Image (cartoon, rainbow, N blue to C red; front, side, top):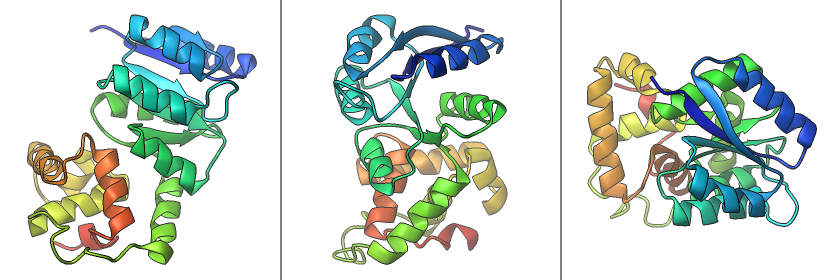
Length: 224
């Protein structure tokens, strides 16, 4: 099996070198390139075509949010995970809106980061429980209720809303299946249907949309 090809974009050279050294110790991972800002990342990524990009947010010349937007425009299949010190909800939502598939904080343990990377390659969301909790609390206060109960549901079944409710909490497909007593493949089928109905590209976008609009109750996935 080919190792996961990883690209690191961060303006702190010492952090890049340390992270690259840690990744080098993983037999299933390989750093194929680095960048010190968004401009350099945008120049290198299309040629290197990494499997996953670890992107800082606050960088000179071009920040990680804009770099993510531009990279996704030229390389839609790119899997981008924000790896940053910022836990601001607004930056998290902007990253998701631009196509990031995860948002992790730099204070996490290396072992947890590697687990999240492997999860992303299985199309899972990379989002710490702390950040998931912050999102839910934020939108409890600021939900946009307009048109939520009529038309916006776009035909989601009760089971699909349960699955989406658990996606919002950051659970993996396997964990969702365990919660709902269904197989992992059944969860994947429900997710495929959800993405089609919501016209979303990935589960991160669907979760962000669901929370922003109040499409699912935060506790919906726990019922059933």
